[in-house]
Image (tube, rainbow, N blue to C red; front, side, top):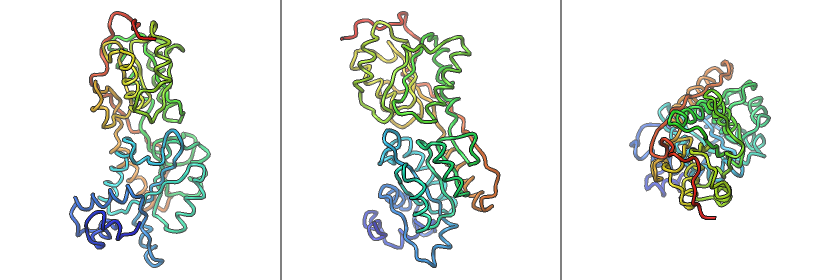
Length: 353
């Protein structure tokens, strides 16, 4: 992919592409947005001459996403949560006159690939999407690159900068909402692929139940794939097996799972929320497309992006000597139509075998 190719796709001149990539005036905001969207989708990384690299270094930020089967897919930038986050990161960088470089690397090749990228085109700092990274992977990268901010995960005992949503609070808010609606028996749909964020959500959910004198029973815990929005056979089988003894509400660890759960329940003739309430987490765009519209935990993606870019600029200006920080961005509950006070019966009889 070359500048000429981007210009052709955007139907603009090569000079317009160059101005947009370098955050310079001379192109309209609509044109700039169009060019940057093509750059993001195509995964384009600008190639600079040796003499240009020194100036590029202080004017660019590298965004690195680590692909891993089950969570951050190869085409992660088409997943709603990451799509929104990237949009805001681009916007915040553009307003500060920074070029945002995009790179996708396999998680198991993380350190070596970042080293190669930085040797070819040195950036001023790195935004690392840590969603599915282990503590050891983050430790290795943070030890080598001081101008580093890790997004979407947090390891409290690491000397590194983290920006993440308050997962524990979000799930706590969801559980509290359902209890306040009158639910006494609330089920939990966990991701079949585990990561730090999901573990923190489960902790917050259970904490809220305990505070209100309730327990999460083993029989009320289910699993679903976190990146599938269609009905899931394994979940359907689990619900069918418990058809005479279901909870009155389900909390799902992410919106994709919640949407899949609603579709699965529909296949079984279970009405949401009349028979069973469902609450998700993330507040992606699809949450208002599904019927009924999804009650969910809103993640302040714009605030995460703004805080991350601001912190990285601070590190760049202070040559990585700033105090490391771990920032949690609080969540808020968005109540829509997939949750309501429970009906009289805790079970849902009459589901086909």
